[in-house]
Length: 64
Image (cartoon, rainbow, N blue to C red; front, side, top):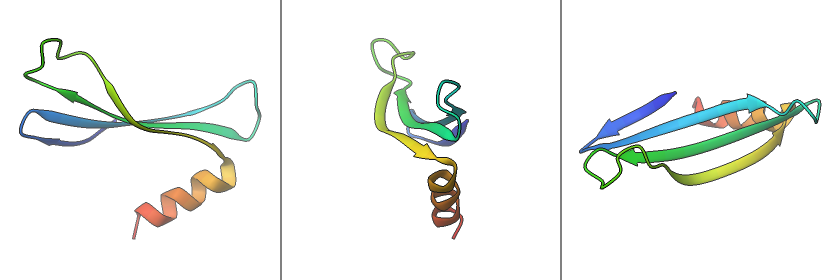
């Protein structure tokens, strides 16, 4: 999901369930740069592995 776009930078957030670990979630925030040599290349800013409760807490803290 696109979070923001500014001056050629696009920031995305990916959230998905981890099938092999019930109750676990994978969260990744990454960017791309429109004018880079390879504009499809992604730079990961943060990767998180969270329980369902941890994901709910993260959503609450970002929704303020």
